[in-house]
Amino acid sequence: MSEETEQKETKGLKKYERMLKNKKKEVRIAAIKEIKELGINERKTIRLLESVLEQTVDPDEWTVKNEAIITLGIFASKHSIHHLAAHLNDPNSIVREAAAYALGQIKDKKSVMDLIGGLEDDSFSVREKSANALAKLGDIRAIDALLKKARSPDVQIRLSTIPSLYSFENDQRVINVLIETLHDKETRVRFPAIIAFNKIKSARAIDPLIENLQSDDPLLQKVSADALVFNLGWGSVADGVLTKFGERRRQVLLASEGLQTSDGSGTGGASGGKEKTFVMIAEELANFLNLDPQRQEKLKTYLADLDNFFKIAKK
Image (tube, rainbow, N blue to C red; front, side):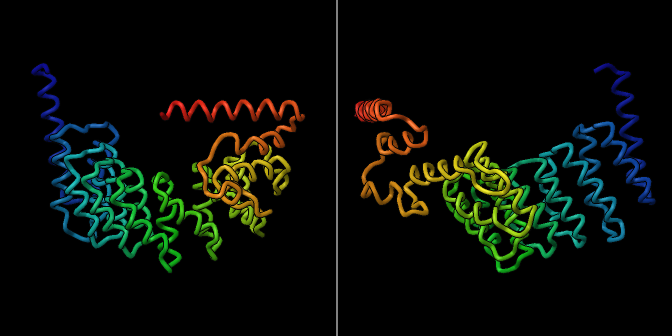
């Protein structure tokens, strides 16, 4: 760095120091906004913003803290995590919300326990931002707390946390709760669960989604249809009902998961608990593809060979 550049930076830093110590909150906010817009995220500037958080104690100046928190989140300053986490307990809910959001932007797992605490907040927005931040972090330590809130008798608590669950789709407990939510008596609570199955594929969600497809709410019908198309494939839903293709896909997928179909069939009963094999679905596939008897035999032979190959591979 040249001496001239260093002098310019020092001069700029002193300018912001003066502005951030000004008694007028409008001047301090203007300084923070300028720092944010210019992207001056050097460590010295970060320290100035952290000092603003520490020194702003007047409750009426929450807008100053809010602007500093948002800027630190945009800068993804990991050095500032403890400053931000402390403001999850701020008297002002807007400041707490900003702190939760900023921690989500930073995505550092050091803030997991603080954000779990944010799920207990009285404010819907703070709980929602805390849950969203935990989803971004993807730390499994958050799952139990999120599931507890997703099953709360309080509708608002369920609504604030359920949208974040899709990020933990590899945990079967999460899938169980999302499927339970597809039956929630509150229509608005079902929405985020249905939308989750636009990102998650599960044969167990198919029948509950079909039930929601028959809802009186046109928007609920739309999101249910989208989720079914994602799970069953294009052409599975037309004019708000399952097509023949969709029904066939439904039966195949349920059978492949060992689940009962509407006619009581399914590999769970037919196989008697034996290990699943490729040849078990030969008949389903043959019917689905409308194969003639000769081609059906070829398919069965091929799948039997495939089963044999994997048995050999396992040995």
